[in-house]
Amino acid sequence: MEDAAFDRLIPYLMLLATVVFAASPLITRLLSSASGRQPGPWHRIGVIALYLAVAIYGGFFGAGLGILTLAVLALLGLDNIHEMNALKTLQATLISTVAVVAFIFAGIIAGPRAW
Image 1: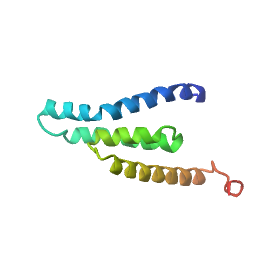
Image 2 (image 1 turned 180 degrees about the vertical axis):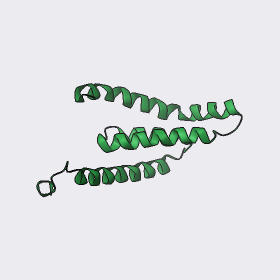
Image 3 (image 1 turned 135 degrees about the horizontal axis):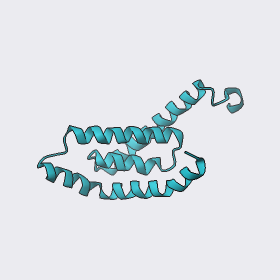
């Protein structure tokens, strides 16, 4: 995707993440009432796949990673904002570390000039 096109999509991506984060208790409640119990394994697998997509996005770009992460954690059923922020910070650190290491090994970062 062209950079300019991606830049135009960012505000909508952030809006979507904010709406999902705000509506996550309702979404979780609707999923629970539809099945008569807590969301099952397919819900968790779907949310984990979404979480992986957010992590890949964060490794490449990172804009709005925090709200995207909070939205996915809320969909997983977390509701303690302090725990969610701690996990968000841990995830951002891990994503950045993995991305930098991958970029170094791929030769995208010229080490001597970057240090």
